[in-house]
Length: 125
Image 1 (cartoon, rainbow, N blue to C red):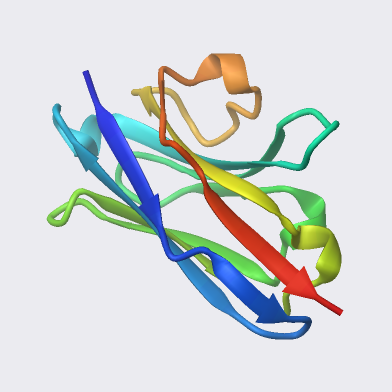
Image 2 (cartoon, rainbow, N blue to C red):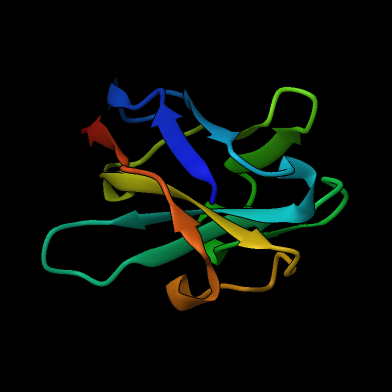
């Protein structure tokens, strides 16, 4: 079992920045591909980004490329989502997810084994 706890969400103006964190516990963090997804009410959950075990490979949703960066610190069992140049359309609940082994090109929610509780990000115009 892996437990995931997100933090760092909040309200920010368009053009601003936020950093989300996801702290993992339970099993060897470095064995897991870590992903971030987001969801708004009435819409399906959307893949945002994922990072491989060592942090050497990452994959991004086209609309966040150049604005968002995923990183991980295996010594701290934490994955981060650095979000810059935020837009109102980035408003959503952001979820951290973990997949044992896997790779960053796993973009479907059902590919992932564990999920956090989510953190709200609201971008005002």
